[in-house]
Image 1 (cartoon, rainbow, N blue to C red):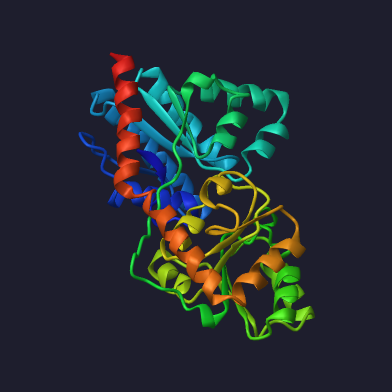
Image 2: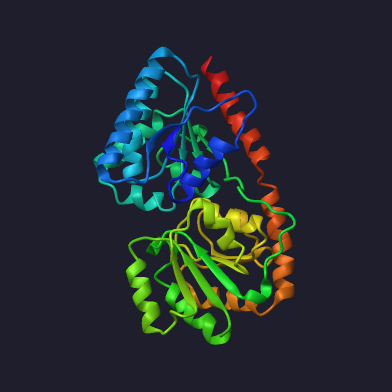
Length: 349
């Protein structure tokens, strides 16, 4: 298995950590070769170079039956190319597991030459894993549909007995501080909600290019005392922060299948999110949360206000959120992954 370090930030790091610690397809075992980590530029080059050497030696000896690559878009895609080409050249069955919140823009805005390279790289893979049917449909413009399989993310957190504190009226946002995650409308959402529910509070967790802008806009609106910017929250603190929440918020413009939503649902937090990527497969509107249009700060704010003022509604949605998380168990995911591997190895015989 090739991909980022299991302690890397973001959803891919969470998925990889699940593979390393919990995912056990019957009859298979993983050897994780780290191709990337959250380090400085020189260290990143060193890690990628070391990974390439390890792969070259391992594949030459025929030590592995299958290669599973975790990749996304941008630099992540470029970083995956030599590993994909190496496995393809050695005729090893190859799975490319694509994690992306904005893959469509990555492809649509590419030059003709880059589009050709993307198509060539993806076509050399034996299976492309998409996180949702929407992404499968998008990827079908680049690679043959018979190579694409949908594998929705697993829920890494499930606590049947935990009950959130509805009276705490705390909204948790946990993602990168980028526009694609809806950070451009976060100040407006906070302002609208706090005007109607003055004893509410927001915990904004993450870091990114909009961190400074977000801080300045919140200060302009005099919201600093009720909106806390906590920075990036590592795996060791994530559950503790989520347990401070009453509701989870993710107003994205694009998503794959966000692990943060699955983690929140596993603790029974109702989720207010947007109708993008794999989110509609996770959230049933007005059943275990609210689905709103991306960029619609008004409807997102109204959904949060409706939940923060109604503990009974929160409790009902909490129960449904946990049921949804339970169906996405580690065991179920492992069985689905085993099926993908089995079919791929049978076809390669």
